[in-house]
Amino acid sequence: MRKVTGREKTLGTTRKLDLSPNWAKVKGIFASFPEIPGEIRFSFFFSIDRDTLAQDLPVLLVYSGRIKGRANLKRTILHFLLVSLLFPAISSADGTYQVLRLSDRQRVSLESIVGELKDARLVFVGELHDQAAHHDVQLAIIRALTETGSQVAVGLEMFRKESQDSLDKWVNGRLSEAAFKDIYYDNWTLPWSLYRDIFVYAQEKALPLVGLNVPPEVTKQVSRQGFASLTDEQLERLPQVSCNIDETYMKFVRRVFGAHVHSGTEFVYFCEAQVVWDTAMAHYALDFLNEHPETTMVVLAGSGHAWRRGIPEQIRRRSEASYKIILPSIPGKTDSETATTEDADYIWLPES
Image (cartoon, rainbow, N blue to C red):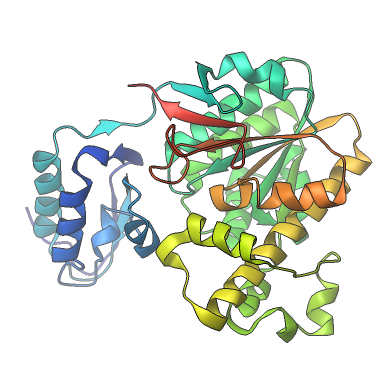
């Protein structure tokens, strides 16, 4: 096997693997091989970020990557095979899901709760962004609600509000996939393939896609300098937001984000950024629903935003709109043992 030199080459396919049975060993391997010599990062085959490692979330995304310049391809593939051989118990996570209904702690099928979802104005479906299986479940929920005859829209954390015109053009068939993909990457950094099926289904069924996010420089600034640092011009780009946080909310943030957050003033600023983020997305979702009173919006957002104290709490403070919350099972955070109705209405669980 020769080295790749002087040009770019793409290898591999998108594939999500469940590493729960061997997570400690996987973390050890990543600690031992943070980089491969040359200009290729270890994430060529393994997409896993510091936040995931810090939170002990047993997920790994194996995806097509690019090698640029001089890189030892043989050693790269050797590391990939090493992990594959060490962990034969790794299995694909694109299977069927059961749902734990938290009100009575009954395990039911995902399909069986559609009747409970269709009358809500909002259905929040959380995700860990890099997990393909989570997006499969999101699409299944969108499809099931659409097939009941309900008018369905899809709210997206992945797109800024200012990209709404492009979202409308995509749904109306006035943008090519290549052009829309470019707009997607201007808004979001995760691989297009993770969300493509959702976007294509929305276009096929003419389901409105609604951008809910705020300019990233705003939340970054708040997380570093606090809400008070925003200028009048920056505030004009946001809906009317306040930034009141209390100890209960800070406990929630620590539980959701764990080692991701700091302490002291930095932690307070981080909390303020989350509140600004959630409040703005709640405003944009309600604006759409007020203009479309017969529509149910399925909101796709990170689990920290979809959690009951995230966007749903900001909805509750501003509206009587009904909502349901579905979160993925995350060990130690929202799983069959730890999750309660204070977190969500349902947890979806991989079948054993």
